[in-house]
Amino acid sequence: MIHKFKFDGVRIVLDVHSGSVHVVDEVVWDILEEYQKHPKEEIQQRFADKYSPDEIEQALEEIKSLVDEGFLFTTDPHQEGYRPKRDGVVKALCLHAAHDCNLRCKYCFAGEGKFGGPSGLLSAETGRAAIDFLIQHSGNRKHVEIDFFGGEPLLNFKVIKELVPYGRERAKEAGKEIKYTLTTNGVLLNKEVQQFLIDNQMAAVLSLDGRPEVHDQMRPAPGGRGSYTRVVSAFQEYVQQEPPAGYVIRGTFTRHNLDFSRDVLHMAEQGFKDISVEPVVAGSDTDYAFKPEDVPMLMEEYDKLTRELLVRMEAGEPLNFFHFNIDLNGGPCLPKRLSGCGAGYEYLAVTPEGELYPCHQFVGKPEFLVGNVKDGVQKQEIIEEFRQAHIYNKEECVNCWAKFYCSGGCHANAHTFNNDMLKPYQLGCQLAKKRFECAIYLKVKQAGLA
Image 1 (cartoon, helix red, strand yellow):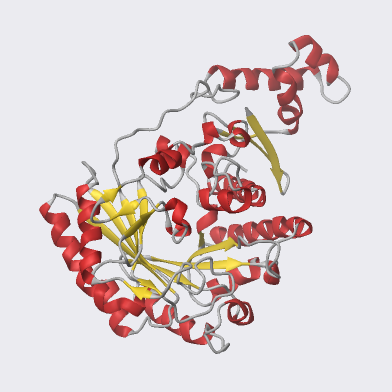
Image 2 (spheres, rainbow, N blue to C red):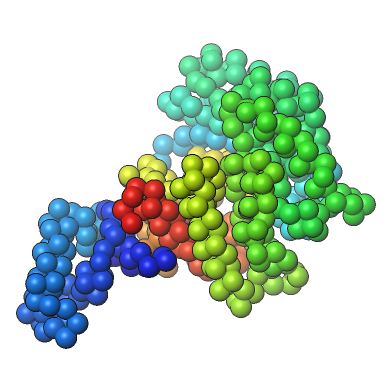
């Protein structure tokens, strides 16, 4: 299987199953799809009016050489199927420090941070039990992860301050290391919190949607007042200290800002260099959900952003846009390429009450409650359902060129739109494929191949 695409005149060919990327000339581009269908003589006749015999011969030899070396038209190494490991190892927890929030983001899947239930804060006792659960169920893994999440986790900063050293000590006793991340809207990111993150080498995910009018429209405070000015100031103050564990500015774009490339560049102008801006996932009953007619503009916005990032890269001022980060040298480990984030078996979410869910986007849905941190996983059938939700069990993914990059997409989005984790969210697929093409093009340019 191959995938051909052009970006600003550069002809790029991806060999799906080897991951090899080739920049080709017009002759090879035209002949490629005929190569496996017709004999050499027929190909020469088909293109005799367009190319000379020597051009055609040279192109055929080039293609044959790549095929012989295993870089083109390679077969699927898992065409007989894939069987994920069933080792029961948990490597990461999304630990909900607070089911409450101090903003009222309009697109929030968590319903003002409460996930369909009452507001509440994680107790230190339940938090310690969650950490113990992770250590106990992480098998031989040395490195484990905890993301303090919400709602807004800094509403419960007091307990977070207790849990971080507790987790480090427990991990040390078990011969492990914990990497901590905190996801915050920034309203409470004061100097004390900033210093705590730096001192404890905690990564930070900082929520910002872009230009002031864009951010304030979708991320207001409870009274309706915008939050942009307050959080940008806090984010800038924090980022200027060059936190050792890093940060990501994480935003969401909606139908209200289809020109989202301007928001990415606005963030860069504020001094942020590590940025992730993702398309909203929302039902058609909302005014900010995308419509089919929006897709061409969204595609063009990714093109605009790609060109701008290329200019910055060539000027020695690169901007790290999360969704354009791909590894063409083998990529992540095989299970991650086939199964994605590991939600439901390697990665679990923990509520303030200690309940376990497959991931934060399933929290509050009783049919996905799998257990609790004190008694462990009690619904193995749900765990197995997530384990088996890999690309070789998704009919629409098996023959898709992007399958090893998107890993089948988000289970929660598939379930929300299709009530079936094995049926990917189609708009998400369209946009993801475009992002991957942009990312591959940037890698080609970075390598000097075009």
